[in-house]
Length: 450
Ligand code: ASP
Ligand code: MG
Image 1 (cartoon, rainbow, N blue to C red):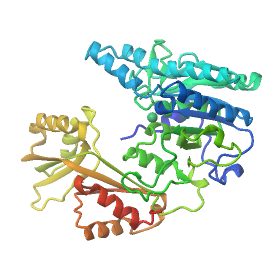
Image 2 (image 1 turned 60 degrees about the vertical axis):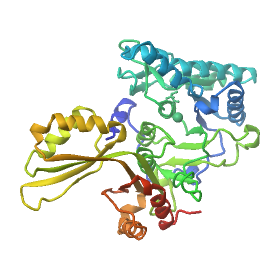
Image 3 (image 1 turned 180 degrees about the vertical axis):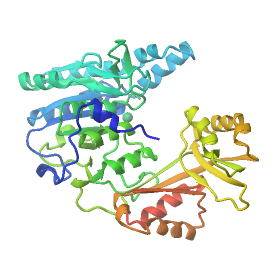
């Protein structure tokens, strides 16, 4: 499902590796008080208009005033990227993807320039950087390019030479061979920020957003959800992949490989109310070695964007799974939970799996076309399903965690359609109507309620 994280290791040079013990300054979740090198990332709602941009500038000024070296990564103003994408579609449904990137990358350029102006107006030395200027070198996969390399040396030189704040347009890069502007996929400025942090060897990457941290589950569903002080990279990767929408999944992979400590915090706190020498509220995403008291379960993620497909009475013989999942893979459809029964008659069996709801029709179509090769009796499907995932590194060393969930859900009359497990999580597919009840039940069961 996820691209191999190891790619990044090669591309950015050797990862710093997993620390054997927490670094001395890192034993508390909070940012360390002494002088540090920081990346501050602000998303679209935090730069929605000039007033918000001024607020961001005050946050930046606060950190600069505390003696830190600062690179800022910004998104486009809220709604801007959507509008740019829409314009491309309006111009032509089948547009040149390189020109799409030329258009959608413009949103971040505007905010980078505006923030540099706002900072200068507050007597903070600053300049803006577009992707090609740094440069942020990427692959040529336009619309979803991967970062290959960022040279952070010039930024570091300027920190030292004149204390200049670097304001970097997120979401964009350049393909070194063609010189064309690229973008990283929606939500990509998180990934820009973590990549810049790795490139300049920042002490921390602060993600300022419209929530004040990572919660045990979505507080809109479970009002008693708690903000986590810390969460391990692996857990956050699962949370984000399995439905929590705090950050782009790739940015967390990148943080994990390069050991970039990521601090998720609110951009709506008034900058002047924050003492840069104390720990603000937020969640630190870090190496598990930095987390002292590890709970068995850290969080519960859920997603209603799931669909289930069951292939009935398919031949139970070698090569069948390949004949099903091969065509789906070729069609670029992500298959998630797979359940296959041992056949009772030795001849046929049922095979059930999930795909993203948005790919449901395409998946059915693909299987329909491959019907001769696969040979099955019929296809059944359901889109009113939800996937609930329970995540925690502590599961590695505790047995029976999933069994407790099965009992608790049974007591509520919730039927489980499919189950998958891995070392640090298990996922359950249930009827979508029971999503909230299931999440609340499991949240209490594992002692996560505040
Ligand atoms: N502006 C881009 C988007 O909306 C990138 C980002 O905000 O992270 O997808
Ligand atoms: Mg975002």
